[in-house]
Length: 450
Image 1 (cartoon, one colour):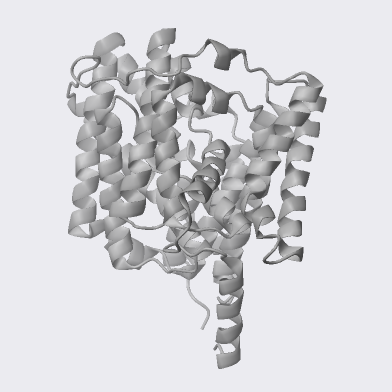
Image 2 (cartoon, rainbow, N blue to C red):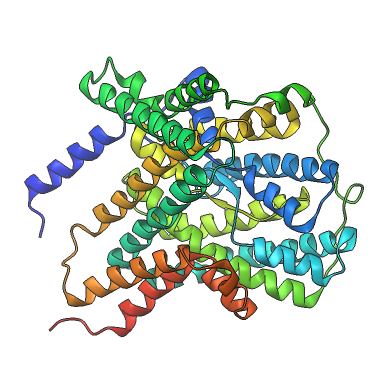
């Protein structure tokens, strides 16, 4: 049981942790700069790039999809931050539906008909998600099945599942440069981030600027280092146009409705909601604002509206990004005004091919170095949620088995994964979802100590 002194210590710690709270006022200029560092740390362009590659879109179709994805992410971020969940969070395209999108596209015959089936199924699924939020059904599920020990475990595995991606894919597997250059760039950007966070802590008020812009500075230093190594390539920026019109519904694309495609996408949306719950817990813990019933219900409605907007723009389902929780924790700035700027930047990038190309030109290893630190911070936030819980034998299994499962699924050979039934592929293709379900089931099935 907490004493009054303990409560005061926690209050002081939390007040020192955030330099700007969610409703804190911050100037337009600062919001724009701080919002930009959230944007550059998010790999928003990767999902549409992968989809275009997997289903074989033409270059102009690929560019249109990336453009639509940026605009959808921007509008969805503003919807969730200011009108629905009202927490500082950024929305972006989800990796979860990738397999389903490719399957629906192929099963519907490919081409315009295949893509219209994907968008039609996404549209119907988004409406059903909105109904789940409006009726409060999903909130009841969360309250019944996700106590602090499970919520903390989910936050922990969110960071844990992303960490191998940051190290293996963004650093060791990056194709921008040689592996030696990639490792060096990642170390330089990570070291710069840590250095400026330390400077911000040492100089307190005077050094606050170092802390709040630490991610941006780390990325700039990483890009300068990449340029000195000769691996920074801005050729795509030079050839891109300054302004281009986004796709228009029913003119550039249409919607068709196939029952099997809709059922598949509804299942994917349920997976998406289970996964994004971990992000919501991570953000609420970082800003020290527990999730309320109203938050969760409005969050689910916001998720549905965001996905509805995305499909209406010709893009794929969006979700909350965990990366931003780590950046908030590092910078101490949780102002929703910053995330309004994030939404604005995304829309601007979506309307300007040159700006979008600039973001995608940042070397993968530079982002990987920053991303790895952010993943570690997210996992630590999960541990903080669990620190006041009594860890008995039951709790040890609730934490340990999802942790093992997360790493097992992150490292699972793709050739083996693709031999499994389609639904199992969806489940195992999302380590966060599978591990979260394991934590929930173990909490219900394992007996508590007498």
